[in-house]
Image: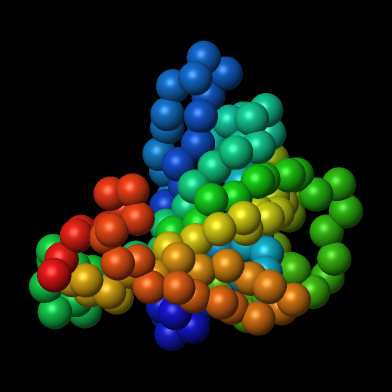
Length: 159
C-alpha cells in the first residue's frame, strides 16, 4: 500500500453534485499522515461538489503499463469527507513541492485554487485476484482485514 501511495501522484475523485448526480474526475494529491490533500481550481466540477456535499470516494490505482494484468490492477480506494482549508500550513505546500513541480505549485497559488483536506473514513486495498483488504487508520497505524467474499456478498467470493 505504501508503495502505491508513493508511486502515484494523482487520484480519481468520485463526488456528487447538488442534484445527486455522480461525477468523476482526477487531481494531483499528497498524503500526510491520515489525510489526503488536493489543490483544486474553482473551475473544476468536483470543487463545488466537494465544497457543498463533502462526501466523496477516491481511488489511487496502479499504472496500466506496470500491471501484470489489466483485470487486477493494484488499487486503493477511500471513502472520505472533504473540507476546504481556510488556512493551509506550509507543511502541506512543502509536500506538494516535494511530490509535484514547485514551479506549477507557485503558479497555482496566484490562481483560483483552494486546498481541500480529505478525511479518510474507511478504505479498501486490492492487490490482485482474491486479495482484497478493508483498511482503516487507528491511532496513526494502518489496520487491514482480508475480505473473504462471504460477508454479505462483498468481494469476489473466490474459493
